[in-house]
Every structure is written in C-alpha cells, then in structure tokens.
Amino acid sequence: MAEDVEKVNPDLAVRDKEGKPYSVRYDQVNAMLLNEFLKEHKAFIEEQRILQETGSENRCIEVNRSSATARNGTSHGAAQRAGQANSESEHSGAHE
Image 1 (cartoon, rainbow, N blue to C red):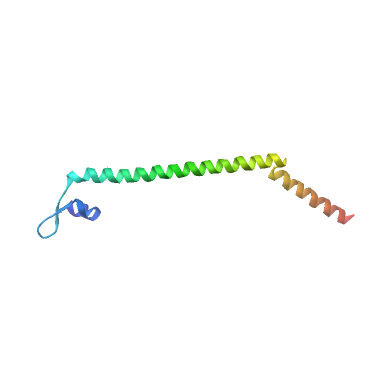
Image 2 (image 1 turned 90 degrees about the vertical axis):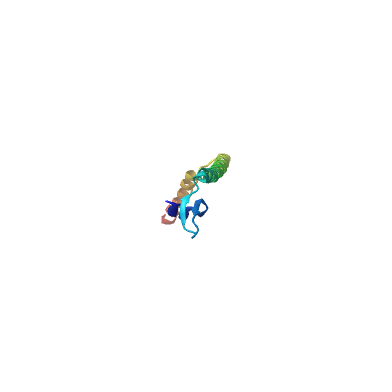
C-alpha cells in the first residue's frame, strides 16, 4: 500500500532506513484530501463566475441586436426577402 501512495504523493509515504516506503502517514491524508477538494472547489466557482459573465454578455448582445432590429424596422429575414424581391424585379425587367 505504501508503494502505491508514494506514486501518487511521496510526502504521504514513510520510508525505512533504506529509503523504501513501508507505511503511510494516514494522519496527513485527510488534510491532503481537504486541500485538493478546496482547490477543485475554487476552480469550479471561478468557472461558474466566468460562465455567468459570458451569459450576461451574450444576453446584452441579443438585447442590443433586438433593439437595433426594432429601430431599423426589419428583421434579418425581411431584409433578405427585400433583397430577393429587388433581384427578381431586375431580372424580370431584363427579359421584357
């Protein structure tokens, strides 16, 4: 068991006179696990904060886009249809 623990965290292994692991510092395992948990939790909280900021930015972009569309009185689809109508009328005039 001490050999396996040494591979993961050498500081938790107790060594004999020859330097080979023979025991585990079980009293330190809880502290190490708590420390690792806190690091992961802090990273998770930071990721959540970034996602919330990104989501807020995306919502602001959508609101701005909607406001601009409302001010212009057209939507992207209406603008495309208007462009197609103009193109069709140009082509029909060429055939007359």
